[in-house]
Image (spheres, rainbow, N blue to C red):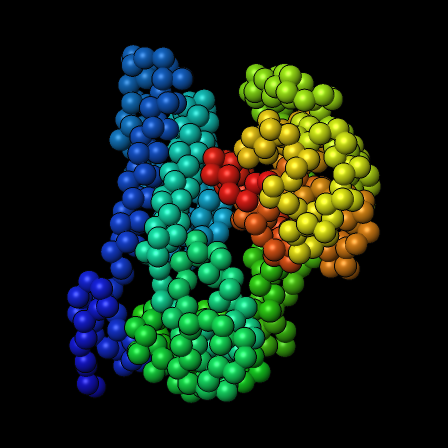
Length: 492
């Protein structure tokens, strides 16, 4: 089988062409650096967890604590092993999504259970306080470090680095829609370099982009070789059925090319989908999205405890904001408004007032200047916003009084945006799905572009959250909210 060699596009590397026709030279350097970074961070997390537990439990090194001092050496190794068994180092869970963080949590819970069983079975006098401090600390540091590494990667991808070269396969309209989405959501790291269409050439939506068309569906392997791609994404289309997809996988399996099949259930994937055999045939089962029982209790508990702690920590900032609002414009510091909550029930929301008191009356005069493409009214330079209000909105400080709503149970820390009654009246049928959960102070659309997002995209992100809620997803959104506030793009 003939092997060819060609130089890489930028670094001058030498690539060998596999039987499937793609050039590759093993994992890219950025991926090896990323993996080494998270391993180092996890080792440091184990050391820090043991050190914090040792000091918190014993205060200093003495004859009773000397055995636990070995935890400074043992815990990092045990923690890395637990993460490995939980598959927290697999590339499929790294780079994007919440599954990576969930597996870190699973590792901590499994390790705690293992320590408890071994201690009970062998009658070892294990300090429960040491374990209950060390493992949560290690897990928290690992999650924080992995989040920091991911933000570094997203920064690299904003600059066009650390990207995967992608060949899209599907019908032209679907390919064009995905190109738009992937260019907007750069953090996925998928750079579309070519497409394969059933028509062999672009005739419609794809003409607006610089994406090359490399022929029809029987030229996919050639397109991969020509573009030196490392990923193929197949969109849902009738021409590529089970046998055709299987043959494509055979062509790509020896060339280190990732094959991704975009399901029509992309927004309801995850834990809700399982493959179960039915009369020998694998069937994809879709469970209903229900936030009930223990899941609802956990979310409500995290919401109210988190809101109470945040109110306590932010009280000086809240008092200062209230003083500045009253001092710079006439009217109350807090603005009350009726919003629609879970199951369409109205409730009163609290926000810091950022507009002049006659803002509602002046709205009719500004309707023709609406910059939103949906039911919301958005205007970057709204003349109704006060001078101090612009700064409060820039850093989302005007939303902080809603912590009281979370404490009362009207809202959640994370969830869809709480709409006005007039907005709900204009909702289409699918949009009403947002009302099956409590509205939130922050959500997927707020951390994905805020007011700069098209209305349709904002709704899609809210529906994705409703269909795929997990505690780890809430944690990631809260962490991303902090970075979104510090880098306030799209806040107006």
